[in-house]
Length: 120
Image (cartoon, rainbow, N blue to C red; front, side):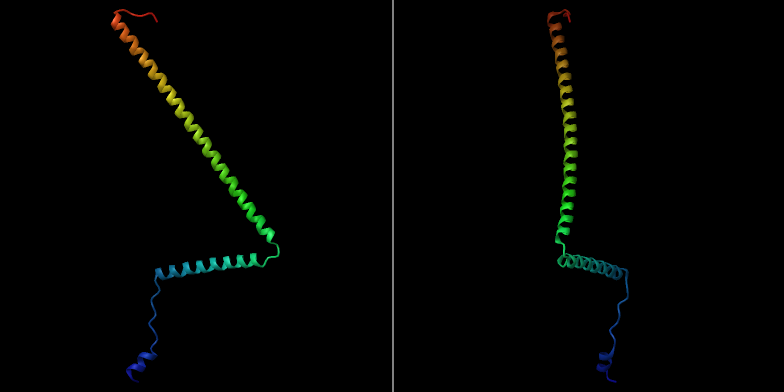
């Protein structure tokens, strides 16, 4: 047997199976299954005799999503109203505190200017 005949008849070396290779095979299998399920669903929709049933299911899904979005908006509005009420209360309280401090400073200035106590 000549060398070129030996190389032609030789089987290709097999690669060792690694964790990376196993992971790739598992992911490929999952992708294939997902594509097969999607294809099956598409075929079922394409050849079904009652398209209104699928439309009804889609409509119900959209209504559920809309109800969820409305609930989220209402929760956000309540939270915003609560935060603004707290901010208004703290702002009003700081305004009242500032006004009383200014009144006390004014009274103190007048007392020192007149040299006597004022009637409350």
